[in-house]
Image (tube, rainbow, N blue to C red; front, side, top):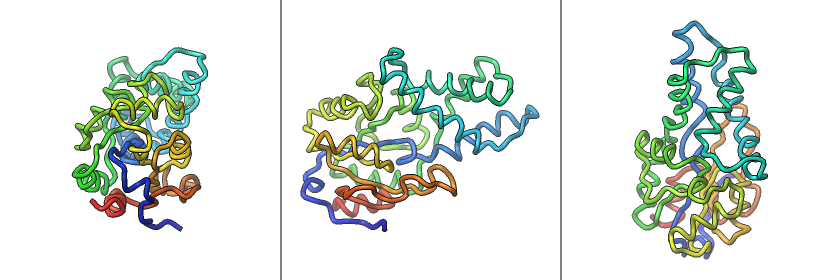
Length: 245
């Protein structure tokens, strides 16, 4: 069962909290679906937009894997999102909008809503810790999210900074190095067990924040912690409590 745990010794010494963003800090599914509907339905196109958002998101890992494997050089997530949107539209037999509209639809991922507990909890956490994104999102995307949702970052780090996608070790190690910290001084905060597992292997402390509706009401993954993470909670407020903030 989920529950808030007292921080281990490794958690109590943490100087920086590094956050996964999509699904952990912000809800992506509902906002993307709403923006797709707002664009297409006035143009006479209707479908289950939540499923469309799922299909778009399903192309995320395969697109990044092409970069991780060396099949293609590094490109930012905005580029991959645009390519993936075109592929989903084509797969559904839908006509792609003009380039300007396509670019704006791609930026739907810049306009995602934080989970209700994210900003209040992170604001508490920032009193005693450095807060940085450690996301596969590119810098412009992370800035867009921060400005749209009021996310209180001290730094934006992650994939574009290191030109590598999680779970590549360099994505994590490069973020710690940018803050002039050892991995043990950093805590990875994520709703995804795989992300935490990769970070722990490199010496990071870990915090699992459950987001049981990230993938909608029938979510079947990441409902519970897969390992004995340093902190397990279901909100940023719970994380703040566990870290004494």
